[in-house]
Image 1: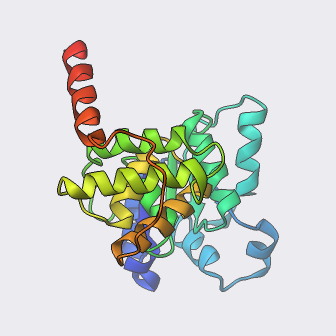
Image 2: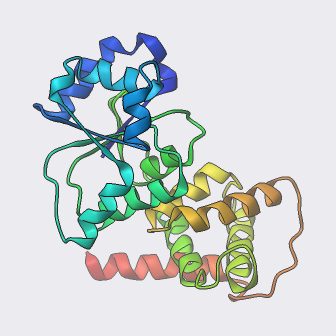
Length: 244
């Protein structure tokens, strides 16, 4: 997967379009958008502008709605041609994209991100996507944090905003903070996505971590031993020894 931030280029994106085309490959250029009908009827929209920069010749473009990506999983199909997703933002669409990548229904994915603050960017970074603007991917999330997030996922059967799920998130973030890890939303969300988390429950983690960073003292029931950080570290050390 690769990504590009529209906010970094705006109308000056044209020089970068060659880099995008080189990664995507030869025509046809497959563009997934939120609403094809709106795209066709909005000649000045940001999605239209982006598509024109990447593929100036409209005859080389193939348009489809992002929700159609979900049909690939249902029909057990795989697209081996690169797909360019333009400015996805709705949670339903983001989840369909994530599931398509997770199940291997899409082999090559380019995502044009509207804002650096968009959660899809955090998912891409947590998943190791290449940033075409810099030519690099972000450093992978800390393995200990990813393991902690797998434990959060184990407790998200009733959500992460309350009950056992909230207990797990708060206790684990506290434990890592005590051992010097930062209480930062982006850092924890990247680890959560790297562990296989979804966009729906990511909202709860974002809310809880933001509150904890500002000093909110959540009352939770302990779900893990007090030395859970040491337990996770030892678990990873043992796993690494077995795999060596």
